[in-house]
Length: 236
Image 1 (tube, rainbow, N blue to C red):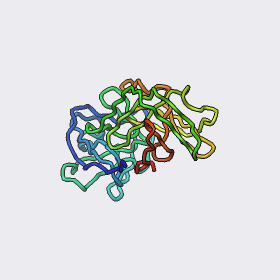
Image 2: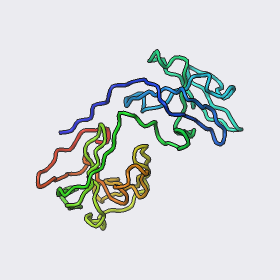
Image 3: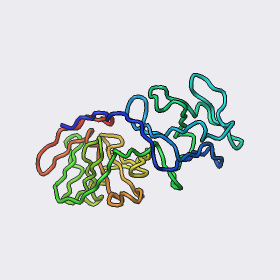
């Protein structure tokens, strides 16, 4: 059975130019940013900027290692902070991903930084994948796309034609993944947000477009006739 184990936290330089904006105003711009690569109770991967690469005057009201960010007539409360856990981060500051906009080179990125140790691979397969919820079969496919993502169990993306879509209702839940794009969710009468799909995934992951995937952690998967154990992950 798959069981999630957080990877080791690392701090390393990045060759990418990193910028942060508050509205139209650039508050940090650096070719010397440092990547804090972690998945833990502290957070997710993020970039830290040398103070010298932060626009003067944008950090306001320092309190306990945190600042509000003020620029272009806007203000984001508690949207910047330091991290003294690592010597390499001394003299550096990072910003909120929820209230500010981040860019790697000229492309906007969302949610958190993308780890160089994190891979997402997709492969077409002829393995038979059956999905059951409370004993009811809701999907049966021999043409899945298998998605292999670092630190997560295998995900089975299925054509909607192989899914009992009459048993699924579009949910209002929407999430964003820096490695795949914007996901929209589907609920089953016995399980809310049981599955998701990416109608417009990022260009690097085109094979999963308009396919549906169920949470291995919350449904029963039968793979080539063999029932699979439910993996233990943060999504369990």
